[in-house]
Length: 344
Image (cartoon, rainbow, N blue to C red; front, top):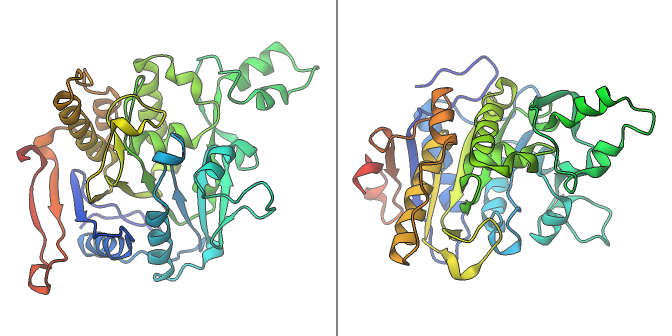
């Protein structure tokens, strides 16, 4: 059993990834419920409301409508959390872009004044209402002016060059996930990315969870360093409990924008407390299909994986990743088998 800090939901052991087959129709509830129950059995604790009484769900709508967090997965996660005592108004959904959230069907159209998804509040970080000026990731990289010109312009004409330079160094964190929730879960999407190699669990929990993030995508070194260092911020990391990736649709080349011809679909759902292990598995999956279709592999291994591992956030060596299968075929098959991910 993994010990948690007092008042915090515990995380499962690093390197442990659960896999559940998705039934035809992909409604997800049975699979998500079984995965969460497997996690609870592993850590010896049940997810439930704590002192704060709220829970966060980080979704991903970056790649457009065709490759966002599946709505049925989001619905299933909400229902599983409801079954554990959270009211819908206490389940907050977070992502970066209001426009992309609307495109993905997670936030209602502009004609609606309510920023809710089926009763759950939806927070778009680019509205700038969910940042705390005292909580940010500091980096000397210059900002991307086409990402958040209003944030940088908010200093006003009287601002000094020193003040302007200071704010340009900052990527503000998602305050609700730091201060409002007991814990949060990450519903990531798998897609290749030129700067990141793999845009998966780590990137969704970090780069797409802060302001002023486009500046990191200029090259692989700056992107991978930002991912790992943001993920290691204690106040963010300590409440980041579970990561889910659906293989219902993932993209192995041509990302990060959605290109249907380069997507694959497998009826599988992964869950882990280790985002590094999940991203390593995505990396191997993507390279498998890139080679089959005559494309070069993503190479070298994305740097954020060993960097994050060196900070104690996970494992990336395939020999250390244990894949535990859940089966729903028959009651006698309820016991999960396990294997090394490297043996696949």
